[in-house]
Length: 45
Image (cartoon, rainbow, N blue to C red; front, top):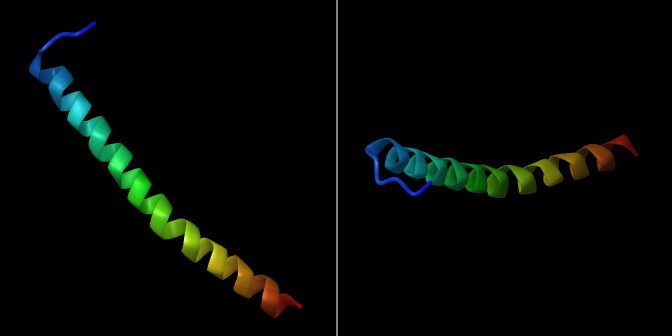
């Protein structure tokens, strides 16, 4: 399975970028989502 073709190299780079983006998005969206849900729960009472 280990082929040093340019396609697999681009695919690996794309997977790394996708993982990095998902990591950043989850780290930035999750706290704000928790804050918003907390505010909504607080204002609903």
